Image 1 (cartoon, helix red, strand yellow):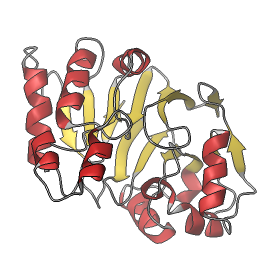
Image 2 (spheres, helix red, strand yellow):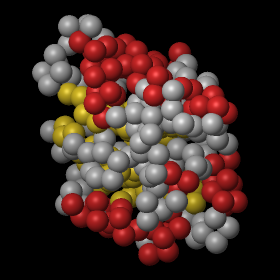
Image 3 (cartoon, one colour):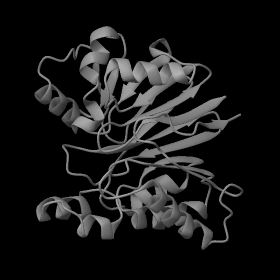
Image 4 (cartoon, one colour):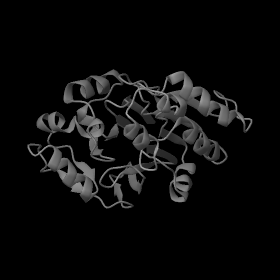
Amino acid sequence: MVRVCTLYSGSSANCTFIENDGKAILIDAGAGVKKTGQALSSIGSSYDNIEAIFITHEHSDHIAGLKTILKYHERIPVIANEKTLISIRNSYPEINCKNFHAMPTGAKANNGVLQVTSFPTLHDSAECVGYIVETGNVRIGVMTDVGEETSQTSEIISECDTLVVESNHDVDKLWNGSYPYMLKKRIGGRFGHFSNEQCGCLMERAAKKSVKNIILAHLSKENNTPELAFDTVSAHLQSLGAIIGGDIDLYVAPRSEVSKIIIHE
């Protein structure tokens, strides 16, 4: 049985859990060892089940938990491209990095149950990536930080059964909000974050192919609401005639709690 969920998701901390036959990985580790452990326990898992932690990029909401997690669970491999690993070491010079492993963007890692492939995304970091996880006949995509899709991104994501994808902000809330102009420009720019509308357009194309389950992730606390994200993306899906809860299941990841667990038998 394959299980997919976010343990927490948002501008403060991000972590996605993917498991098959008791073997699991985490994608990102934005919260510390205690919070992550509690989240794992709440879904009947633990650090003993974690085969590796894959990192998308070095921003603190994706790596801040590594320091304490690796202090108590140093056996767990941390996998990312070389530029990202260097940036993590620079951000946390005291971190236990003896089990860091470089995986070039586009390469694969395989433990016999889960095959993980990275792909490049446009985001203002050293070398940001998303991940495709294949296990059995299930294909899962995780893309939580991206300013603009590319033809490669669109093609890769569209071939997935389940997606964890960024729906960060509502454009009107962002530009009419209290953020400084330069921060608004960064978030809304090519190397920033996906808006609800951008996410909806990509999900509309993905729905024409194979996607059946979508978790909207990395919502901004200030510039979005779960209702806005859900309504915007569902409108795109419904424009195809898709029935939400029938043809496609659509969920919004909570900031500080485990999301809906997607199960593939």
